[in-house]
Length: 108
Length: 153
Image (cartoon, rainbow over all chains, first blue to last red):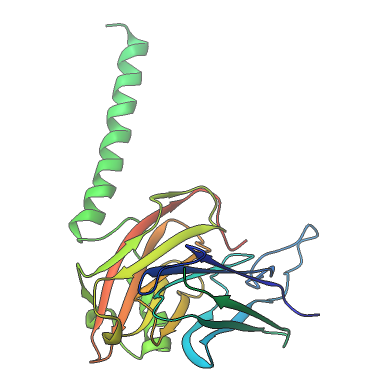
């Protein structure tokens, strides 16, 4: 079952050279492995441990979240919108589940 | 004044001095509320192979986090470094009192030195942003986050 990822640009269509904020939200419970459920048992750790962001194939950011990151995590970056291109976000969690999302950055 | 008012006043004064002492003790160490360097050291060694004394408090790193967190499981943090993008290699974030002091690591390559996310804070402790520069310097900014409902269970 793939992990759901949402990518949003703010502003949606930046002008060339303008700063654009990239917001990536991943749907994932991000269990740290220290929480207990109603019966008192430890919920096993299940969190995303790697997120790669590429722009036109070039790796621009790599996040290594850990048990300290909240559920349904938000990863936000800022970049200069020098040219239009395709942003791709891939993520992987402890159990080997993966998610992938591409989003096109278009200039105003 | 009558006895009840006197007792209330003296109880308040005693509580006030105890609290003030604790606070001044913490502040006297130059420290933030809930500081726990020993636990932080473990995380620093594991991730960076460095110690707390290798970190330099820097005005160039800006950390925005709430002073009081509504929920320890969902604390928004925002880190910005006023350095040129090509000088910043990575951003790390630690929380002194978490079981795993490292909250996350971001390696940047071509994006601006900015990152925002939501983290879990176990109990009232400083959240520290450490920016690793290409020439090996570790710049830090820290802010104490007060937590009522712990984030890690």
